[in-house]
Image (cartoon, rainbow, N blue to C red; front, side, top):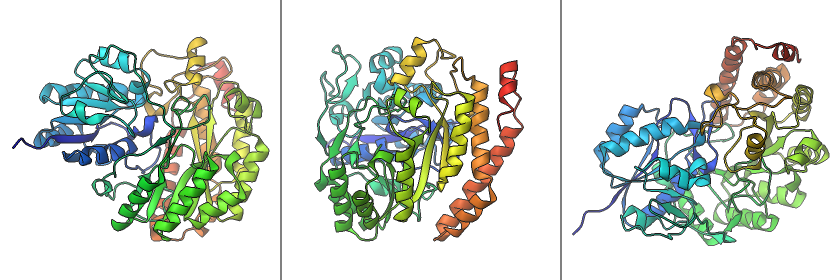
Length: 482
C-alpha cells in the first residue's frame, strides 16, 4: 500500500504582518489577522483527495524563517501550496527558494503577481512547479501527485506551452473547507464581536470595474447555495458563530445576496457577521434581510468624495449615495467601516484635505486610510506605467512601512504619506470618537479589541510624528496642510 501524499498549506514567514490572501496583499496596520482564504478553500480540495494535510501559517504564529523551515522539514511534505504577494515578493521568493533547495517537493503558489504574470514567474523561478490561477476552482490533484499535464483547469504549470487560461463560469462550488485547521485564537479582526471566527465566501471576484482594485480583472461568479449551506452547518458544529463573509462586494447581485441571507437564517439564528459592501447597493429590503441574518458591520468603500476622481477611476459613485448608505446603516443598527484611498490620480493635497474633513463628517465607527497601490493587473497600474510615475522597477507595490512606490506631478510620495498619517490622527484622536466607541461595546472581546487597536493607533501616530521631515520645497509646503 502506497504512503499517503503529504500536502502542506503554507503562509510563509514575513518580517512584517503581511496578508497575502485573495490576490490582495497588504501589511496589516494593527494587531489583527485572519485565516487566508486561498489556503482555507484549498484545504477542502486536498482533504477530499485523501491527502495528509498540514497548515503552517508562519505569519500569525510569528515564526522566523529558520523555525518555519524546521517545522516543514519535520512534516516532510510531498507538495507545498504556498501563498505569495507582490508586497512581499522578494522575501517570499527567498524563503521558497531555500525550501526548494532543502526538500524535493512539488511547489505551487497562489497570489496577485503570479496570477497576473504566471509565465514570467515560472520562467524566472525554475524551482516552482506551477501557479494556481483560481484557488476556488482548479484541477489541483494531478499537479500535487506529480501527474501534471498541460491544460489543467485554472493551473499554469512549468512546461505549459499554451497561454494561461482562466475558466470563466457564472456559478462555482468547492469541497468543504477544513475550518478546524484554522481554529487559532491568534486570528482576530477588530470588527468581530466574539472569538473564534472564520471566513466564508458567497461570491468570487467582482462584477465592477474600479481600476484601482485588485479585483478589477477577476471575473465575478456566484456560489451554489447547497455547498454554502453544508459549509455553514459544519462551521456551526465546530461551535463557531462569528463570520467574516469575505466577498469583495457582498450582494453584488441583490437576489443572490437575499438568498444567502435566507441560507444563513435557515442554518442558524445565532450567526453574527461582517462583510464588504458597496454604497450604491444600500437598499432597505437588502439591509433589513442582512440585519435579520446576523450582519452587524458593513465595510463600505468610500474611497474619495471627489466625484470626478471616482468617475475617472471607473467607480461613478456620488457623495449623496455614500451619505444615504451610512444613514441607512445607522438606521438599521449596523456598525460601519469606511475605506478611504489617499492619492488616486487626479487628487491633490487640497482634495485630500477635503477627504479628511468628509471622513470626520461621515463619522463611521472605523475609518481605514490607505495609500493607493499600483496593484498588478489593474488599469491604475497601467496608467502609472504609461506616465512613468512608478519609482523603482521591482515587483513590490509598496515600500518599507507601506510607503508609496509612485508619485505624480500633483502629489509626491512624501505628501501622500504625510496626508495619510494626518488623516489617521485627525479622525481617531477625537475625544468624541473615543467616547462613542466605548459606549458601543457589547462584549468583553469587543472591549479587548478596542483597547488593543486604539493603543496601536496612538503608538503609530507618535512614531510617524518622529519621522523625517520632507525634503523639497514643494514637500515642505505640503506639511502645512491642516
